[in-house]
Structures are given as C-alpha cells and as structure tokens.
Length: 161
Image (cartoon, rainbow, N blue to C red; front, side):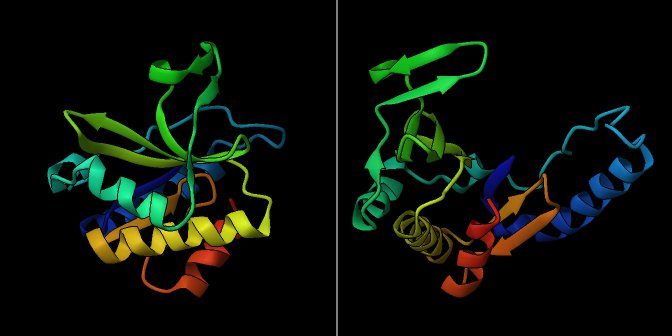
C-alpha cells in the first residue's frame, strides 16, 4: 500500500515501517509469511487537515493527469462513472482519493507507473501536494517513505512503485 499522509506522522512512519519490517522477518518461513500485521493508527489523519477535493483537483489538472473513468476492483468488478472511486492517472495507475463531504479522507497510489511521462506527472503532482499541504508518501510494502519536498527524491520514490 502506498499512502500519501500528513507530515505530522513522520515519527509514526519511521517507527511503524521498522516494526512492520521486523514483524515480516520474524514471520517469514522461507516461502511466505505465516502471519500478517495491520498498519497502526496514524496520529494525524488526512481528513483532519480539512482539505477540499476541489483544491487537489486543481493540482491534478495543472500537472496533466486525467480523471479515471473506470476502475477494476478485486472481488467487486468493474466500477464506472459515479460508482468508480475518484482518481487521476491512466488505466495502469492512479492517484486515488477517498472523500467525505468533499473533504479528502485518504490519498493513495494504485497500479504501476511504467511510462516516463507518467512518472513525471505523478512526481509533479506529489511535489505540489507536498508543497501545498505538507504531506509524505509512504510505501508500506517496501518500508520506505519520501518527504514531498524535492522532485528528484520523489521521482526515485515513484520509480520503485
């Protein structure tokens, strides 16, 4: 899972990525994991930042990301139009938004970003989100995080998605 969360969670991210990595090492039997662990509760939730979707939508349009019209979800099927989650990207990846009353509740990235132009667009989007709202990207699978302050660092993070 790749999340974009408030910067105030930096200490939580550092501790939680280490905890998850240690848990994984303890519960790996050579072919797979014998147990799973949930990600802990963040100290500051995205919705607490009171960011209106329209403010983020302007950024997505500015960097050249298109609104996703349909999404295939595991165990659900193809979601189109009003039933599709809100996202920007292509049929290969998306910067996704969970909303509550037009406020951003969660931001996350799905899919694989393979195209160089798309990597640049996502990098620019994340940079602007970081500058505008003080957010951090965290890749829970890889136990990595990235402050959204420098395009070069963000680009390297995006390459590993």
